[in-house]
Length: 285
Image (cartoon, rainbow, N blue to C red; front, side, top):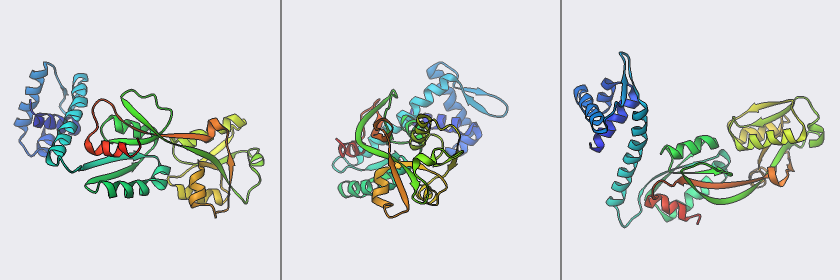
């Protein structure tokens, strides 16, 4: 077995076809078939279930796929470090929540680029559960997520604590009066967002069960909708004080339990970080 065998194996799994895999790997189908047969003989198991229409991974094939991704990732890291042992180079994919993207990503990019100009830093914004899954599945090198985290296979570094506040338009009545309206309208991100979860927990605490959610995908959109009086929302207080303090918005504090959010930096613990990732981690140690 060599690393090219694993690339062919991944191509078959991703395309569901020996023919398509051959096209992806710029080879002939007979070679793909031979390499898969060789792998199956080496591991003494069937890796694919073959039908007339497509091929699917067996349970054993799924196990090998997990390790194949790790092997390919390690090989690429080794190549990067061997090419430049004195200068830290490479590419890092870092995940974060929408608010981190808006509030901290530019600052992180600037300071990191000044210190490590040969490392390409890429940010991806997603919901917490997606970010955790992407780190575990080698789609991201690390991610900023909210605590608590009880996921096996991840190391975590505490980054900071933030205070969350409820937002309402200054044109509307007080928050105590707003919660008596039925249905109470909220302006939120999609399901899976930590801010939405905290706001809905607050609704439960206040005995609010009849509410209607308007889903948006940007902080700016949420601010605009709240200011217009279309509903209430919940965001970090720092965002409002730094970027939206002149808007017609009132903020209301929460209890310590609901109003405190701890941000963690998480990364895999099944292997030592690359030089590039370690350089990023060192910024927070």
